[in-house]
Amino acid sequence: MTNLMKAAVLVEPGRFVIEDRPVPVPGRGEALIRISRVGICGTDIHIFKGHYAAESLPMVPGHEFTGTVAELGPDVAGLEIGAKVVVDMNIGCGTCYWCRRNEILNCPEMRQMGITMDGAFTEYMAVPARLVIPAPAEIADEVLALTEPLACVVRAARKARIRFGQSVVVLGAGPIGNLHVQLLRTIGAAPIVVFDISQDRVNMALEAGADFGTSDPAELEALVRRVTAGRGADVVIESVGRPALYQAAMGLMRRGGHLATFGLTGPEATLPVNILDTILQENSIKGSVAGMGEDMHDALTLLVHGRIRTGRFTGAAYPLSEIQAAFDTLGERPGDLKTQIVVG
Image (cartoon, rainbow, N blue to C red; front, side):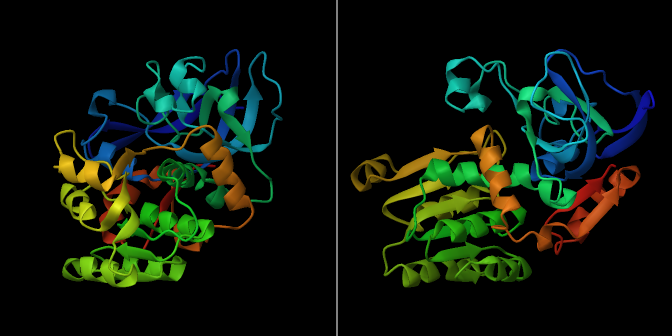
């Protein structure tokens, strides 16, 4: 193995530099992963634009990744050199109250690969071996790289306690919104209504399993009422991160309904809530942001067994050397639900 590797460093908002860096040496309890594919996440875009984690720059972003085990540090068991793997990006202490409850993002010592520390837009990463999940060799790298974003959706459904026969509105039909729709279809939610200002993305969501969809904000509430016998939806999922959509969501759910807050907003955004209505109608609101622990294992199982249609997510790929172009052109390629960086 060469002693140097390529790494895409975001040195400031909007600018990547490809650097030569030493290949990490895995320490005790660590595994060295040779990265093969990395998806560009909405969080990565926020970091690229300087909206999020600016205090971490310069940094190597990237957390939706797959690769193979290249080397094992001392005291690592259960992993084999050359095995395909995916990796849980969330590093908690492993012993605190929140870690024991699989709420690692609330761990006081929590770190996230590619967000608060260097991530996967590089050729090699040394990661805690306990976070490495073996994957079947026959599953394509571009599919395995979808494990982390799907895990986020799995966790959101788990937090919202979505059951078969429940009506659900998904606000936003981008990559995460599309995955929400597909998972909801697998769970047995019905009807599933999707909204996005892009009719093309609405059409893709309908193709993926939504029952109804619209790109016209003026039609949305009437559509939801019509297909839910006038009640409103059991669950509304906001997957964009726009305060106006969060406000609209409050008017789309039924009495006793649930709002799943998923889309990231700026830190200053607030959601006015009528406290008396929330009490009397027994409404609920719950946040969910990232998959972790068992969410990753469940997401991988769904992908391995073909429960998710991945074709729309795997068509756009750029080599690591062209990562700047990949980020610069994202807004020009709305038909690509996901862009991946090919590392190895």
